[in-house]
Length: 182
Image (cartoon, rainbow, N blue to C red):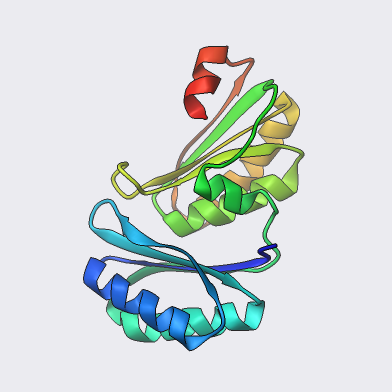
């Protein structure tokens, strides 16, 4: 089970590839994602124990230098986080949908983790900058009160660092809307 993740977001694809290589050579970590996102950025997402992730991210920052635009080291992640990043979440009945939109991939991941830890919700997806202009968003579901609490907790992350674009809670969504989110 993945417990700690690290991420570097760079504004150069070539430097991102070099950084990913340095990160996985620097410590015993697993490469979860290493790919380009819009608009010409590159993300590297790794997992491992806390010390290895810290060492790997530090090595990546040394190689990426001025091309690094955001980063995160997130220990003790919520168990739903990786499935939501991979779009592999299984969701049952839905009473409400919540969405949070951010300017930063790293902020989106931290906000999703905070939301999942704040209330009994299901993370649907964490969309990381693919075909959305480099922005990111989180969708989640659950009871109306839980979704409101989770969205508030997650959106505070983006408010605090200036990366929140918008947030919404939709009680009793139509079935068609929910099905399109899966």
